[in-house]
Length: 207
Image 1 (tube, rainbow, N blue to C red):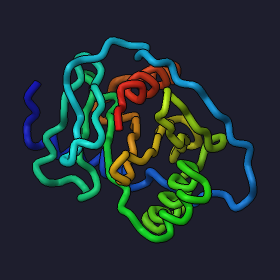
Image 2: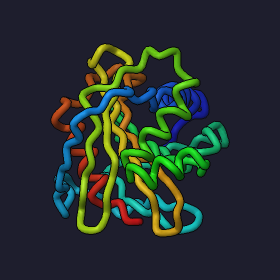
Image 3: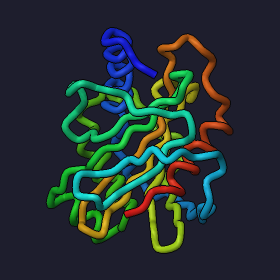
């Protein structure tokens, strides 16, 4: 489906706003971390549309009917792919997490949870602390693959963004986020449906 330049920029602006708030500073206190075993198969029908990094160290599939958003160079330098569903009510944002000594140290100490915390600290300065972490951190496993997961909201819980972070075999760090959208004026997908989409895309991630 072709997008006009005006519509493309409008939708992409929302994605930028959402992804600029993808991280909040992690609470200092200790929290109970839940470990979840992912289903090896997606819960919804997937397409052959492939998300791929330039180095080829991470790939994923999009749900059937989804398509990539042509950002025409408007995206953050860290974001390498943005896709939306046909109704423009939810988007999948894929981004790299730059290496730094602090994230390396936290990754060595806490694994993918340390990577999530390091990402929080990096992006916290981009927010006005209005973004709230929902629940706690969790880890998700699918065979040898391991992800650090969390949810946040900027609307008191009415709209939840779900994120997963992970490290590839080449030592590169990545983030996948499922971001609800309101630009189309259509009703948001039910929360349970968003969870299925998030888990289904995550099940196809290979790194």
